[in-house]
Every structure is written in structure tokens, then in C-alpha cells.
Image 1 (tube, rainbow, N blue to C red):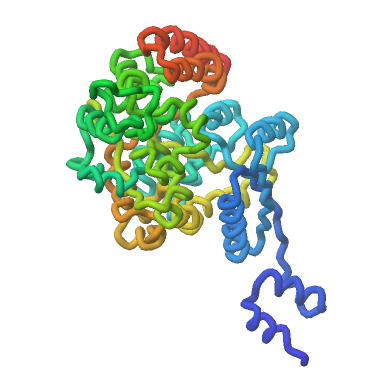
Image 2: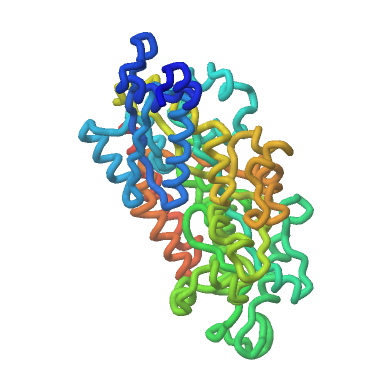
Length: 455
């Protein structure tokens, strides 16, 4: 059967593939010929991220037939590979940028300034398009934008709803009147914590070396510890880009977390989990743990459809105030790109609802775009079986009011590796915050100050 060029284009939707086929067949006149620019996009991630990026590329290329995006997926040590490629002059056109490297690369000139492109964009430049002031707080470096946040992630409780029902305890929620005070939270943790004889912390004969069920698991790394500092009226990072964990308020917040393990015995040590061969998800799912403090990304595997027990989610307890640190990687155009216009069009596409919805639907992300937080917008990504019934409130009510977006300064990686992370490990082992944090912060801030002066 022979068909005309017009009929062929009608049947195939006039796609770039169809145009290429017609050109091979000799049907395509010069007026319809189109140059295609190839750009590269680097990033990390598991199967979900890989599939999501590929799906986005397919849609983007269908809408932008003059651009071909090549996905350079590196599920391993992506940032080290990226830094090496930047040094060698072989960086991709666009890519993920880890939050702890964003300011360093921006100040060092590795990232393209997209401020005017964002502000003048008819969609992204609309007032209130992003959740503010959080988005500007993380994207602006010396008042300029060098990337756009990919999403938001933040910590909250995942809890075993069946254990709460059995104890007759009302679980936490995300509304202000559903957030526990710290002392209330501590007593609830004690009610859930039991040794093999069924005794609770504070009971006569309670054996802290023979605990079979814990109240909470609170990890000892920068996001869950940093939020404790903010919740107690302190700061993880100050406005001038220095570590603030040596203030009395911050140290008291940190001490409260380590006391959960070593004084109150309501949280397991890392060694306890290792000896059981279980992670926090398995502990919740086997009725060994009432509450797990984890990032919003964990909903991708700790959701109702994958759990044997009924699972819920709620806000972390407040000390002086509610708080959760918000963070995520950035999407940026690298300054070395020879195709900055096309690269920007791709990065812009990644800041539209289609791309975020894919990851929000599976529980991995929280939107940073306000249109996705409206009643209509929620329909695009909230999914029964993935998101607990109250989960939309975390995105629409809790984070806009209580979320803290931190900008990580140049030199942070070295400062953290040499001083802050060892101090966190010491906290996990039971050392007191007041004994270790002042020296650790002093050393870390010397590194940060030197890095700032070198820029």
C-alpha cells in the first residue's frame, strides 16, 4: 500500500521519528528538515529514578523534537565522577547536583547562572510558583540561582498503627494540635518499650540489655539530628554559613536524641538493629518498633501496600517548636555546556509537574511546586495504598509552616567528614553533646571559613 507524505504524517502524529522515516524514503522536502541538538543529563538513583528519568525524556523529546537528551545514569558514586569530569572538561550539559556540593560548584563557576531565565519564564517566574521562601533559600547563592531544586524531602514518623490501637494511644498527625510535646512523646515511647518480661523503662527490674520492643528509632546523621537542633530553638547552619550546633539550644536538642538511647532506653542502638539483622521498616512491620523516624523518600518502600501491618505517618515531636529539615538535590546546567539554550529547556521541563508527579506517585518525593499542593493538584500524585490518608497534610500544611530549608556552604563535606560526623558518632555512642560539640563545631567552622576565603 502506498500513502502520501501528508497521510503518513497524519497517521504518525507528525513525530520526529516519522519525519526521519520520510526523509529516508525521500518524501521529506527541505522545508520540513530539522536539526536535532543532543544534550546529556547526568544523575544517580535506583530503578525508580532511572525509569522516571527515561519517562520524562520520552515526553520531553516528543514536545521538543529539536532536542535529544542522553541519560548518563550512574547509580554508584555519581558526584565523584561528576567532579572528575568537571576537572577534565568533559562534564555533561545538565545533571543532578548534590545539595552539599551545590554552593561550592556555583561559587566556583561550574554552574550556569539561570536567574534571569527563571525570573522571566512565563510559568516558573510566576509569583508563588515554588513553595517559598524555602525554594529561594536553597537555590540562591549570593542572590543568584544556579539550579532548581528537584523536589523536597523531609523526616517524619512512620508508625505501626496496630501497636497504637492495641495500647489505646492516639498516634501523631500533621496538624498543629496533633503534634506531641516532647515529654508526651517520651512517655509514649516508654509505654511501647518492653523487655522480655514485659517490663517498661522505669519499672522495677527493667532490663535494658534484654529489650524486645522499642518505642522509636531516631537515626544519628545530619538531617534527623539537625532538625532536633531547630526544634529546640537552635540552628544546624547559621545565616552566615557556619555550623551552629554548639549553641545551648542546639546541644540540648541533640542531647535529647542521644538520651532516647542511653538514658531512657526507648530507642535501639545501631548495634541492636545490626544484631537482629533488621532495618527500621522490618522492625515496624514485625511489631518490634512502634515508630521509625525516616525521610519522606522511605514511603516508596514503607507504604501501606507493602507492609503486613497497618502503617501511618505523623509529625515529629516539638521541643520549643515543630521543625523538620527540607532538602533534595538540584537540577543544573553546567557552564561548560555548548548548548545552553537547549540545556535550559530541559532543566525547565524538570521543574514542571509532569516530572515530579512520577516520583510523588510512588512515595519517593514531596512537591516543591504550589500547583501540586492545591486540592486539584493533589489528585495528580496522592495515591491510595501508597500515601496514608493524612499524608497530603504533610506537604500542604506542615512543611510550608514548619519546614526548614538549609543552604549547605562550600567546604561542608570536608568539615563534616573531619569534625561533625565523628561528633555524631560519639553522640550515638553515648557521649554528651556539651562535651564534644563545641570542639567539633570550632574545627568545622575553621574549615568553612577557610573555604569561603578561598572562593
